[in-house]
Image (cartoon, rainbow, N blue to C red; front, side):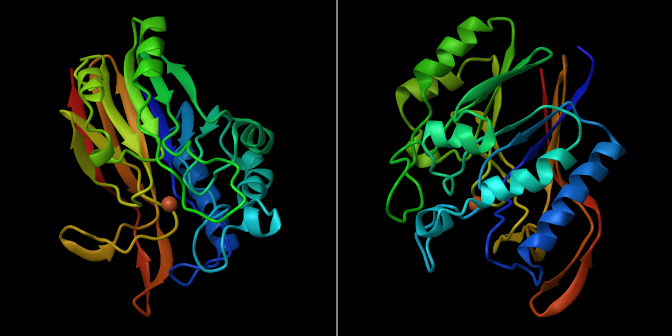
Length: 277
Ligand SMILES: [Fe+2]
């Protein structure tokens, strides 16, 4: 297959909060602009959004905006920006802050809570890591639902010639220690896993496979190794071909306030991961 590029975006959290001295409206404008600029730089064939577009469901302070006042920032974000996304297919997985049931999620976003996408020789399986206690009438932060081994095996059987990449809002390493999951991930057709939720862009391991985190475009209190600053706003790209994959965390240029000081973070990439077959 020809080399293809995918963009993975998570934890954008359009909501009432401002972070790093930038209000949510302005931050969403920058996100839309930066995705468009990245497409201009080197086009991608697909965008996968891995959850947390909002605080529509949220346990703390003023609570989630959907439960409190039937306000969906997820929907508002799509209404404003879907037309400004590059002209490629995109899919939205729900995060733990989007606890909408299947029907409501599809009404709001046009997406299913679980889906699969074929791109060239690859099958992306998008699975729902927060499928518990949906459509709540009380404030909570989501209920983790481990990887559905049966569904993934079935999809892999239906697409027997494809390499497989698993994507979700989160991979809770400690919740994925079952023998069935270990046996599934031992399959050499499974290349790696991508997940959001931690707001970091680092890499962990699960049963010998890399779990690659997709950062944030909102906030992260954790400093990058060797750099006192937090993981700054960005997204991952992913190059795919017959020989392997390459993914990097891309941080567009942004002027923000960090620790009371205005700083301009230059465009740069970090967190590169290469897997060769
Ligand atoms: Fe998040």
